[in-house]
Length: 507
Image (tube, rainbow, N blue to C red; front, side, top):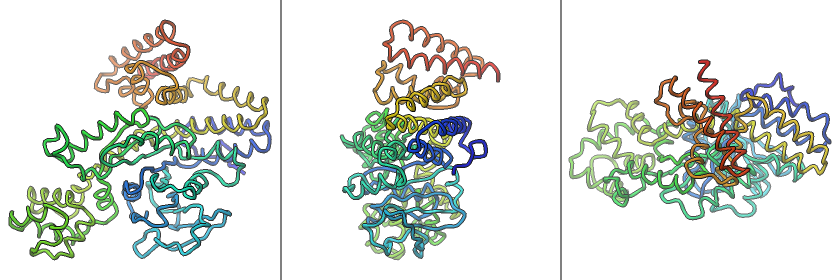
C-alpha cells in the first residue's frame, strides 16, 4: 500500500500534484491499470534516477565512483560490469544480489570497500545488483551504472530491461513504466557515427522516452588522451583541445543532450574517493626535484615513466600512473613548480580542478537536480498515459486524458507543458526554424528567468520588458505563419514568457 500523497515527501509541487491525480484516478480504474499506477507512485516518491550509459571501456564506472565519492563500482571488465548496479541511499552500507526469481542475497564488500569482482553466485541467475550507501549524494539521486553498450549481448539486454523496470507487472505495463528518468551518456575522443543511435537505443530500452536537453547530458571522458596538436585552435593545450572537441560533439549530439562536457574520469575518481594520499604527494615532490632532463624523459611516455632510472622507485611511479596517468602527473608537477610548499590537500584540490568534475557536478545540479520535480512529474505523466493506452479500455483512457488535461491547464503546472514542447522540438516531432528551436530549448532549459530569456546579465527591469516582448512575438507567430503543430508549441512558449513576465513584475 502506497503512502497517501499528502503524507509522502515529493520532489516538489508538480510531483505532488501528479501523485494526487494518480491517487484520485486509481479507484476508477481496473486492477491491472491501478497496479501500474502503484509502481508510478513508488517511482514518483523515490529520488531522481540517473542512468550512466555509454560504450564498453568508456569509463562509466570510474565516473560513477567520482560522482558518489567512493570507489565502490568495479572498473575492471568482469561479470559485475555486465550487470546493472543501482547505487542508492541507505542507512547501512550493503550490497544485495537480486535474482531473476525475486530472491535477494546480501554479499560483503571487498577489502577495499567496493563491490567484489566475484559475486560467489550463479551469474546466469542474477538480474542486477542493489548497492545501499550512507552517502549524502544519494539522498536525492539514485545512480544506475549500466553495461557498456558495445558489450550488450541478449542476456545483458534482458537484465538491463528487467533491472530498470519492474518484475511485478505484466509485460505491457512494465514497458510503460520502466526506466531511469535522466541519462548521463559517456563518450570518448570522437563521437562515432552511430552514437546518436546508440543513445536513442539506450533510452528506448530503458525509459521508453526520447533523450533530450531536459533529461540527458553527455560527457567527453578521458579528455587527457586527446592529442592536442591534432586539434585546430588548441595551441597544444590538452584541455583547450578537449573543450573544442566537446563543442563539436555537442553539435552532433544535440538536441539529444543538454550539453557535452569534457572530463578526466580517472583524475576525478582519484581526487574524490581518497585515492590521492599523502605518500602520493611526497612522491610527486620528489619527482618535482629531479633535474629537468630526467623529468622530461619520464613524461614522454607511460613506459619511460615507469622504467627510466631515477631516485623515485619504479613501483611508486607505477602507482602514480595508475591513479593519475601522465597528464595528471604533469598537472601536479606544474602546481608544485608554481608553489613548492603546497599542501597535500591543496594538491588534491588542484588535481580535482584539472579533472573537470566541478563542471560536471554543476551541470548535474542545474539540469537534473534543479528540475527533478518537473522531470519526475513529466515522466510519471508519460507512464500513466502509456498505462491507460495499453489497458484497451476506452473509458479508462478518457478518464486519464481528462484528468491530465485538467492538471496541465493550471498555471502552476505549465512547466510540464514547456518540458513537453521542448521534448517534441528536440526529438524532431515538431519541426521549427533553427533559431526558434534554440529559443524553445532556452526557455525549457532552465528555471532562471535570465537564462530562459538568454540574457542573464540584464537587470530585472530590462528582463521584464524582454519577457513581455517575446510573449507577444510568440503569440503573433502562433496565429500567423506557424503550422498547426508549430502553433501548439508557440502557444506554450507564449504562455511561458507571460508567466516569466508576471514572475519578474512581482519580485
